Image 1: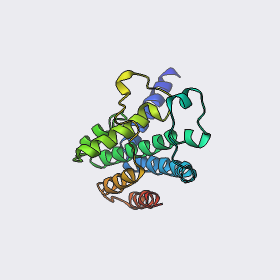
Image 2 (image 1 turned 90 degrees about the vertical axis):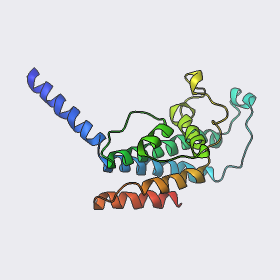
Image 3 (image 1 turned 45 degrees about the vertical axis):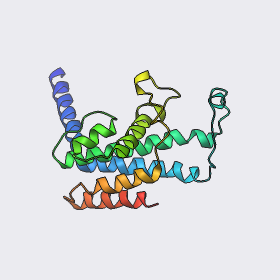
Length: 186
């Protein structure tokens, strides 16, 4: 019995590892994250630009609609991350377990300008902490120069440009790519 359990665990581990290297899997995740972000984002369009002070933050005087902004950026950042991992798997590489979008872009062979590096650092902050926690878990993650600069139009363009790096190896990949592009046009 114990021998069978080990064999099943090994098979399960191998199946998981095989999925981790599957471009389709990463594109499906990208599509799901973009869709979820779209649900939040459609409501954020109604929110007027509001300057939030640290006093407001600590006194919890921030409207719920404003509190939805960091999770929205987190989902957008995760969608960029899974797309970059889809590119890596399409190149026959195994993606590293990281939220560092700049590093993943470099592994994909994407040349980045200084401005693009700055944008990816901003989105990485939302993946690592800003979309989930009120403060960074470590001082090394806080970079006040990059934290608030994560423009949505730039991210959509980055996604549309990056997805072109994935070859349309089958109908599923082709369909997923077109769905991702369609979502970025909304």
